[in-house]
Amino acid sequence: MKRIILMFILTMFVLGVAGVNKANASANTEYSTWLWDTNQIVTNREAILEFLENKQVSHVYLQINRLINVDQYKQFIKEASARQIKVYALDGAPEWGPSSKAFTNFLNWVSAYQTSAAEGEKFSGIHLDVEPYLTSQWTTNYSGAVLKYQNVILTAANTAKTLGIPFAADIPFWFDEMNVKNKYGKGNLAEWVIKNTSEITIMAYRDKAVGPNGIIELAKYEINLAASLNKDVTIAVETMNLGSSDGFLTFYEEGQSAMDQELALVSDAYKDYSSFKGVAVHHVGSWMELR
Image (cartoon, rainbow, N blue to C red; front, side, top):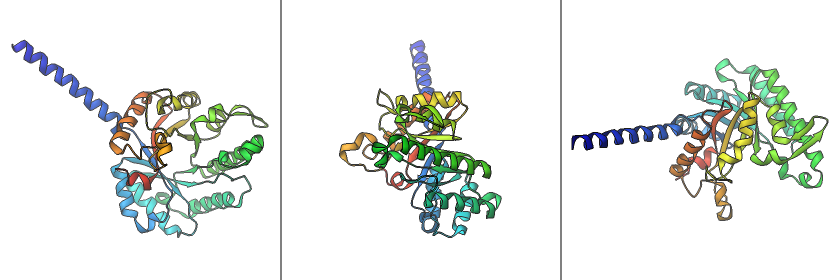
């Protein structure tokens, strides 16, 4: 009888340890997120920072709104830094080209800001969200659209290098299926972007980690390639309400607990890869409202 009790206790202990390890797969993961509504750093700064800290967010991509006084950015970054949160300057639009006024203004603003800000108030990187496939040119003149996009990436990368900060870009998981052949070389678009950035965020917008159409599988190529190139990869998921027809793209219906479980599986699958730098949740606004 004692032997049976001992075996029962040992079994419970092993299962308990396994349970702790599984939970920690999520707890030890670095989280990133996008903050598109820049006014929040003025009107709701403390609540935003508290949320980011509670969710263990290590990086926040803050969209630049030039109408907001620079002192508000300095204060937000200073308080975020005190909570061990890095802030990247974020912007982007599908139609951006290397000479687009909005793009040029963004880079000029970031450069001027970095020069005027104190050490604890500076941005830790530049983060671009340029999605050229949302323009009509992507279907009417694919080669031209890709070349314009590549010029944007290289221009931003050069600015980030001059400022001495990392440069990151968002890409969809299917960029590895898009062929490129021009003055910048040939191959697939995902490979080219990884080579020309410090880090990428893969928009692997699915609500399941496992399976042929799951988050883990969709990010596999980029994770492996980035590891061979000594680059960083963050895997992104969605929390916005995209409507019932696109429910499998977002965790809006499933909620926070289900998302945590799936992201723990993603973290566990890639925890030993040098390129894997955690999970990005899109975005602060919808994440805060997630049930």
